[in-house]
Amino acid sequence: MLNVCILGATGSIGLNTLDVIQRHPSRYQVHSLTAFDKYQELFALCERFQPRYAVLVDDSAAEQLAQKIKLAGLPVEVLSGVNALEIVAAHKDVDVVMAAIVGAAGLQANLSAAREGKKVLLANKESLVMSGELFMKEVEQHGAVLLPIDSEHNAIYQCLPMGYRCGDTVKDIRRIMLTASGGPFRGYSSEQIAGVTVEQACKHPNWSMGQKISVDSASLMNKGLELIEACWLFNVKPEQIDVHVHPESIIHSMVEYQDGSVLAQMGNPDMRTPIAYGLAWPERIDSGVPSLDLFALGQLSFERPAHANFPCLGLAKSAFNLGGTACATLNAANEVAVDAFLKGNIPFNKIPDIISRVLGSAPVLPVASINDVTNADQLARLLANEEVLKISSSDHVRAV
Ligand code: NAD
Ligand code: MG
Image (cartoon, rainbow, N blue to C red):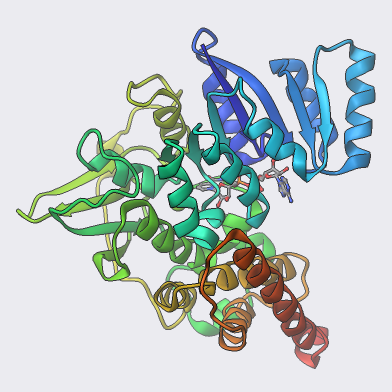
């Protein structure tokens, strides 16, 4: 029986993880569930899974949850605050940590899990983008087992030789073929992209996901973050990664070897497959995902990314090549810009402009400790907020 801590339990990945766990009650026990402030949703999960700990970052939401749990007579201890995330992720009884908080907020808890040598199922790509070198060092030093949950990276991992450990070099690789759906605005002109709404951006053609990653998928920043993620996980350079737009999202990524062999991992676009893979690794378990029907699908297609209309992918590549704090800057500027778009404060096509300006003005400093990363993150947020303010107070947005 493995004890599982789910960071970000109320989110899309968190709920899919609980769906898989519920199918295997003799293998997995929910040790702890965390969320930001949605106490009613977390309470419902506490009733269903009776974890030992429930964590809410927001203090007043945690008080509400504690009251409800007391009234219901559930044997669940409620913790609150940011530090509580680290407490449960590093808890001695936890075997597996599902890292599924969205954004930079997941960084410290993920690092704590790695330092305690846990099996870390990494969905939260932003933490690796921000602190790739440090994170991979912690994993290696403390003997943590890092398994990628992002569907593309999970696919690549599955196409690598058995026994491969993330961070190791695979010498006989020619390239990684990272697939991308192209998002809801694939084929749009720059004029069309300028007028898209939040609702359109959040409606991904193939995947059902949280709002932030949906917007990232629409701007192709998700692919940019994933390119950086792949560089750290598989110890490759950006030049070894070819992004293939594959609108059907059936091939989740491929690895090409020196002899010309290309291995692909395929399946229906459903995150329960990589989640089940991570939970059961090195075994396989039922995930609840239906069989792939290639006859119904008919064909699989591929195209090159449209860099001119989707500059975020190129921005991510440049940030990785700049090194040091540049990826933390990129990530923070993107988080601020996406949040501003979701709140209706900037148009969609200003997201890459803001990131580009912030990357141009923030210094690129070496990363010796996690403080260097968090300082760069904070500075980039300040700069990005200034850019948002400039845009949102301009006539253009007022007219919209
Ligand atoms: P989501 O928005 O649905 O859920 C996010 C979770 O994080 C929620 O439980 C929320 O309470 C928690 N959270 C948000 N802000 C927080 C904060 N400041 N402190 C603590 N907790 C906080 O997001 P999601 O779609 O489940 O994505 C989670 C992560 O997984 C992201 O990094 C995303 O890029 C990655 N990912 C998601 C998918 C997917 O299919 N959804 C696929 C690949 C990778
Ligand atoms: Mg992905």
